[in-house]
Amino acid sequence: MAKGKTAELATWVERERPQKIGEPEWQALKELLAPISESYLRRLVRGSQIPLSPLVEGVRQESFKALEASLAALLDEYEAADPPRRAAVRKLVIAAKDHAHWAARKPERKEEKEEMILWMLTWLENPPLFRDWVRLRRRAQ
Image 1: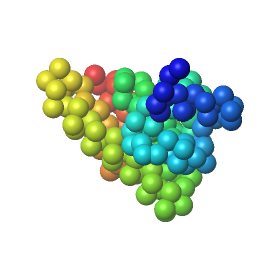
Image 2: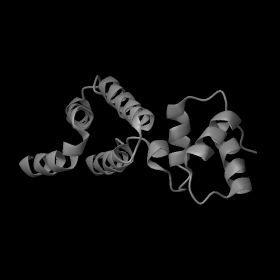
Image 3: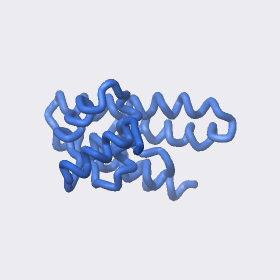
Image 4: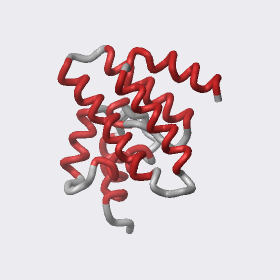
């Protein structure tokens, strides 16, 4: 029998059968699987194949298409949010940017991650401009 956080998540999914993992489910999973880092939990729930709310899914960095889609979804959240929620969205993007900085230390990923960092910095500096900026950026490349 499988053990560990993955098995605990699978048991929870089987029991709860969520149609989507939103923020209430995220909080429940953080408590159920504690101690667990948010980055590891995010990786686990992404692998569950259950739709995730933008704040649960976070900033996807496996491709530029995924990065653009996740930043656009977070932009929708940001634009509809009150100041505390906007701060939470920004915190998520900042954490992803910091992770990309760390990943950029590997020579084979440096160029890709530096471009992703630029995308996230642009989002952080002027969120409403992001969609137009990324469209122009893609055209220029």
